[in-house]
Length: 435
Ligand code: NAD
Ligand code: G6P
Ligand code: MN
Image 1 (cartoon, rainbow, N blue to C red):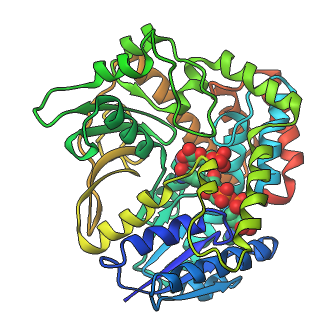
Image 2 (image 1 turned 180 degrees about the vertical axis):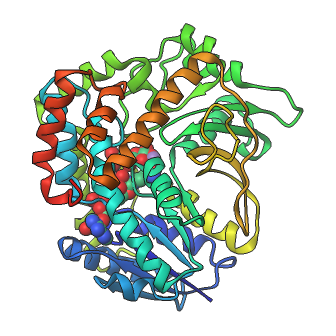
């Protein structure tokens, strides 16, 4: 029987997770679900936790749902530990978005200056969780959803030494659905290969007859007559430049907009900033509405409104990964995992986000090989930036932090990098014990 602990259990995404377990009740012999949060998230935990209990009961299941602020009690003998926490909650994200934008620099949850600061706040916490896991559940799998998921997963595997870590994101799931829809072919009849790093990956697609359909999809999704639709609620729909994507020869992920059409995205973000409507501010209102719904003692299913959040369908990743490990199902999934030569352009010991079956012993990535030069150049810069961010987060090293800011493609180097870094360090000082 399984014990699953979820850190950040007060998240509004928790019903998504519970729904995913219920859907897989025949493959997951769950006995206990432990939702853990901290004092600041206690009210959210109680509200969404009561909702989780109602969902389990409505499904006729006898799973125990425990709500606790005691992380150690939750971790004790856990089989799976999933993480979905946000250090400093949405108020910290508002600062990550608004402070850079107040200087005319892109501010985003997982990219640019904001993404690097989310890593600075989060990496010490994940390493603390791993220290507890070494003592309390040494055989557990760590299923990391906490952003920036790529850097947090790399810190867990490479620096925390927790090899049984899988990093997850819902973005690839959306791209799979989008390809199936555009081609009019069932998703299961298509073969996908994703490669890159979290929120910075590309993919290629083949059909059952073995024909590659990537260029056709580029035309269908990003062609001159198309409107370049983004399936992500949190990313503005600005169109990519078709000729450039065609030259790329791979399908970009939605987040590539911040890099390939940076000025358009910045312009739009500044408009949101001026209206007081950056994404975190909008999400704060969505979250408040969701928690009002969750308070309804008759609500015992995941409400449609949760689709307003960017992480919708997240359980298709988290719960399926757990089911696939537990049953050695070998479901083809996209996971942030140790590179080990899968992408030859990147270090062996770094974490990459790639496709492959999930077995009882973890993810077995398909070999990808090398990228074309234009993609190789930028991903090597991005990975070097990530490695520098992780080092800065662990050592609290100001020079490393400044270096990461300087090389991040979304932060102008020089004086601006330093100004922004200094301002963010002050704004977030309560959540940066290492600096
Ligand atoms: P949220 O603001 O609701 O935070 C979730 C919970 O984490 C809160 O209840 C909070 O109190 C708790 N928390 C904060 N610090 C904690 C700590 N040290 N220990 C335990 N709990 C703590 O956030 P959310 O919008 O639900 O998102 C949660 C996380 O998941 C974020 O990091 C977000 O970026 C990430 N996320 C990732 C993906 C993905 O694709 N990987 C998708 C959606 C969300
Ligand atoms: C998803 C990303 C997540 C991100 C979320 C933001 O698409 O995969 O990593 O956290 O969007 O959604 P939100 O509703 O919080 O803006
Ligand atoms: Mn993601």
